[in-house]
Length: 153
Image 1 (tube, rainbow, N blue to C red):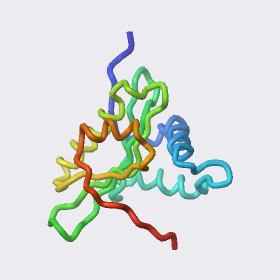
Image 2: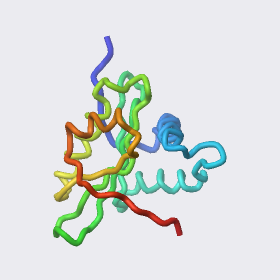
Image 3: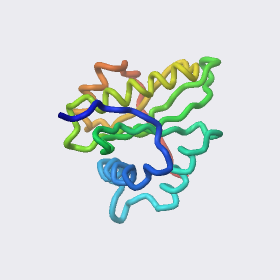
Image 4: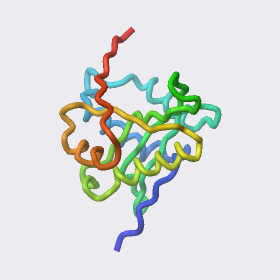
């Protein structure tokens, strides 16, 4: 019988187990091979997750000593509310854990962290083709109706 799912903050010793999740997340969104993120970007993100002075945070889902998913989130100011907002930037579960409540548990853990920090909202984006994940997201949050524009600099 497997043990309970544990959602917790990353520790420095998690890097080796976290990195394949991170690589899987990036591959899912087409950032692999020739379009992979530079190792420096990953190194900087990891250092920020471990720095208590940073607004960036990382959670992992663990069962029986195996990491099954990750959630990265950050707090930032906004113009429409005096409290910070929480942006859930990255969410990923290993394919064999999908449909088992791992994604939901990670999102709910981010909600709990945001409440504890006094944030006014949690929000995130997903690709329009990510229909499977949107089935979960539609149960846990409201669609904002906004479309994202961006320009690399």
